[in-house]
Length: 162
Image 1 (cartoon, helix red, strand yellow):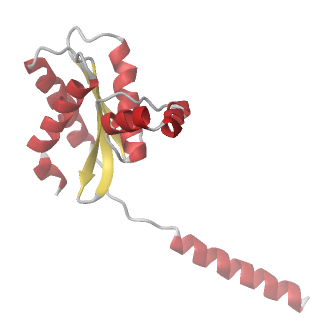
Image 2: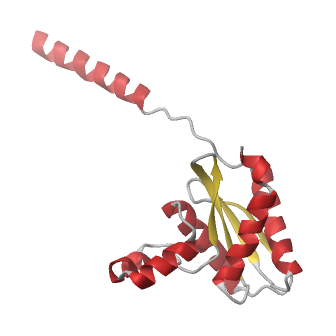
């Protein structure tokens, strides 16, 4: 009986210690900032004559804000979300991932990961060295142009993430 009680106490203490160690403090993207970035990204692309959709996801890859420009194709909705998800998941711009996968046949299977889209236009959002979200843009006549819109907006709003 004493052995059972000692084992139960040890298990309880181990569980309590593990639960305490699992508490994390993380930065995340606010809804207001996410919506500001989505709207500004669509506007930046519209200024160049591109009809796009922009999705902003949080650090977990969940949609936080979305904006769709007038005349943006219906395919741009999911493509922008998938690009944002890919960028935050890999903590890397999707244009870089696409180029790397084209050079490295072993990386070509990244497209088999559910939800990944290896096209330019997904850009991580960083606060310091931490990735706290991503912007995904779809609809410009090239992923590099989608990425340019997101990069410009992140540069203009860099003060939000310091």
